[in-house]
Amino acid sequence: MAKSSKKQIYEDELKVITELQKNGKENIESIAKKCGFSRQKVWRIIKGLEENKTIWGYTAIVNDEKINMNRYVMLIKKSVAQIDNAVEKIVKLIMQKKGEEIGVNIDYSLYLHGEYDWMLIFTAKDIKHAKRFNEILISHYSDVIKDVKLMETLFSVQKAGIINPEVGKLKEFL
Image: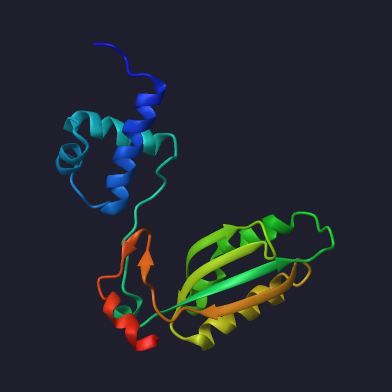
């Protein structure tokens, strides 16, 4: 059997990734059927994607309201002063998960290009806990941080490419 070209391999991987993004819990047989591949091919593709870190995790998409949590977005602007290991200091905070001590769960930690340098998306029980996390961040890294903006999300229309099944409730916010 002839080997697939790099372009074909890439296209096959994208098909599998697309199906996994729609439903990461989908079984291999169903993914194979939707992609027009054998189970073995899908299994090999997924294993390869995991090994080369194209896929580096799986997660559940949760309705924050049903677990009594609120979602927040924090934008962080680094200090203009060139500080050795500024990024490492922020990453260290995230890696240490200081927020977990006060019930903050970080979902996304993103390094940005633009007015702000970093974005955290996290859940907390309430604004009090989110502000406490903000204070911890600033107090531990005042030499690195110039500005922080904290925002609470009101409604999640879509998460990880999945439309909220209760999207009709958005009317309540408009």
